[in-house]
Length: 259
Image 1: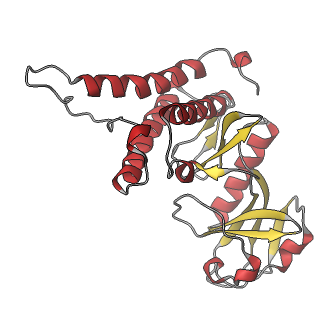
Image 2: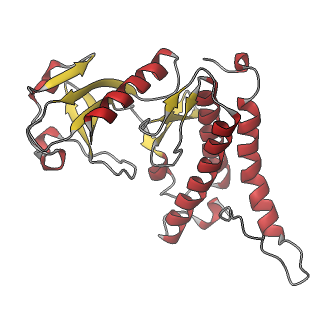
């Protein structure tokens, strides 16, 4: 099967990239070093004609599927990266590839949170992530894996905005169910705390930026008097309220949010 690049190619030079090589072996002259989140796939950034493209090696089935999902989101003006094309028919043994346009001036959430953060900045970051989840839900998109690594952050006109960068685990529906909505809320909550704790354990998260504790189904921490500790109550209240607000907003009238 010959090499095929399917999509709305903005730069014909994309076909000249070394598709016959595994992505992790591409020469440095084709690549640009940019921060990226944790991924189970090989992801690289290529610069062509003054534009930067994110390229992910993935099976043909999932490359086509994610390309279609991202186009569906683009037609709905949802906050997500722009799909460019998918590549099939590479040399034997090589996966297909998905090409998206790099969101200029953006950073992965994980990279943003790797520096010193003031408490009010962290709050605004979490608010932007909650708004992203609400807008996706209102457009009928079930995410399935909301995490810091597959979310981008960018300042838009001074405001904090979050964008979906990886739709591999998602799916489109005319309207998502209450179970799907709550699943996304729970996964977002669990992943957020897990990744924040990883950053804090590695000394990457400023101690003043958060005092939250990870969610747990076990009984809450108690004081010597058998009462829940004040720190546990306040930390869970501040972040848990944010995600409950997101859940409530996503069940309200879609006219409240731009589609």
